[in-house]
Image 1 (tube, rainbow, N blue to C red):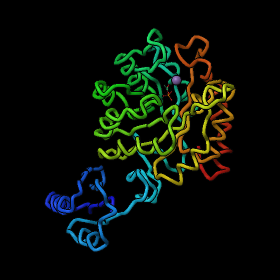
Image 2 (image 1 turned 60 degrees about the vertical axis):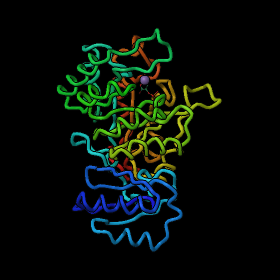
Image 3 (image 1 turned 90 degrees about the horizontal axis):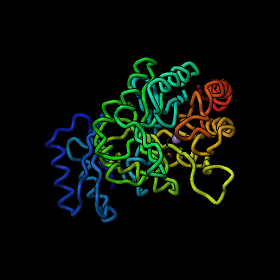
Image 4 (image 1 turned 45 degrees about the vertical axis):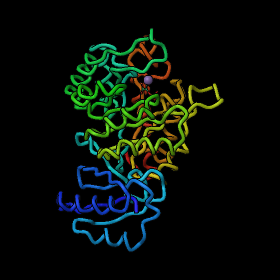
Length: 341
Ligand code: PEP
Ligand code: MN
């Protein structure tokens, strides 16, 4: 017994009753109030709970089901939820038949450039505008992003184009302002195991794009998703963005096998970011197509109107016309695997 799913009409009294029952058996309860229903994660050595005890909990009023999960991640596991999770972001679905594309610059550089890129990606068929206002840079001397000013430009570009915004959080102290201006909170590769940050984001109800850590296994990545979900925020998307290997021909090695692996292990939507995966403009389109063929639910692609002058990741950013062409080329690939662009 690992998870207790409560009925939608369960009362506070019912919840208290279940928690007491668990505590009397030396276990602890993690009550998470999701948007649809309340779920109790059981913490402790659940292997000692007998079937009779499990049945006794199943019989408590307000309890819909008691689920045993063998994986270390519970809420994120396919065992917990058979159907694919679909996340609605201002009316755009992620995880459904249609494959939305999140596109935009690596960083928000200024209002004019951002507005122009936003209009171009919208015209090309993007469903979301991406752009970092808080940038995790290797060098402390490199451009660090515009901070709140950048978030305001994103919100303005969003209002102009109607595209919802994806932007990165690096520090829990920025949570309030990021929640205010964004539609999806991105957790970057470097912060995938920043557990305090994961918990903070988990305590909001904003959809989260959780990027894979530079050297993280799929299991570690799912455990990070579990941190977010354990706080009650179940709207998590996993984004493959390449991992560190011995190979130097590409910036990272885009692990596309992670897509079908994740589809087996979890019900969460899977996003692929070929831009950071390969690091080179010419390689983005073939890997974007391969990602769709492999079963990706969404793509994240860097686009810049003047990549040569971009303040970060220019080498891997598509020009708007290349983005537009790619969007057209993706259509038949999506159809071949029973999806839509
Ligand atoms: C980004 O999306 O611009 C970014 C910094 O990505 P990652 O965390 O995958 O390196
Ligand atoms: Mn980038």
